[in-house]
Amino acid sequence: MKKVTSRWIPHQLNDEQNQERARLCRDVTWIYHRQNHHKSTNKTWIGEGESPRTIVRRRKFERKNLFSIFFKLNGPVLIHAVDNDETIDHDYCIENCLKPVVKEIRKQRKSNGTKGIKLLHDNSSPHRHSDVINYLTEEGINIIPHPPYSSDLALCDYWLNYYIKQNLTDQPDEKSLARAVSKLIKNIPEEF
Image 1 (cartoon, rainbow, N blue to C red):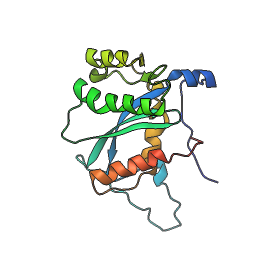
Image 2: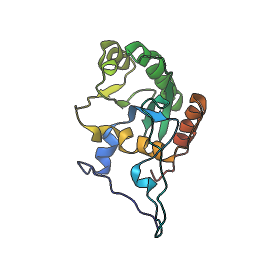
Image 3: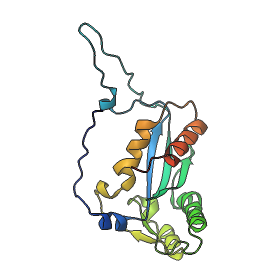
């Protein structure tokens, strides 16, 4: 038996609605090299007169990396670690994220390719740029409009990023962090 905390969601959707929300979801998340985990996971039982264990707070400029994750209902499509000195603009988004995703989708779906793929990503400026929209349209990918302030539509935020951050261990450098994140995502149990 274990103690769990309920998660608040604004709407309960049926299976059909969940299937139609997005066939492909993209999100970016910062992942720290040193894991503190959520406050609720650091709870411990202590006896009379014992001191609770201490957790060192992260420094303001603790090492972290940005990951761009493309995910379908049946698993990851692309896990891209963004270099620390990179700026994500529309060109970077197309060349380093969208083109590899389209290539991977075509490899996974030989007969259909990108036909019927719906992409949900947030309203950040690189995603709204005309070059990005034109590229996705040319590739036959339908863009699902993301209403502002609707975090419940970001499927990755809904469970994936939380899962990664709760199950990741401390990593010494960028390469080992990228390997650990990829391994963790590719081995997500089916019940999730």
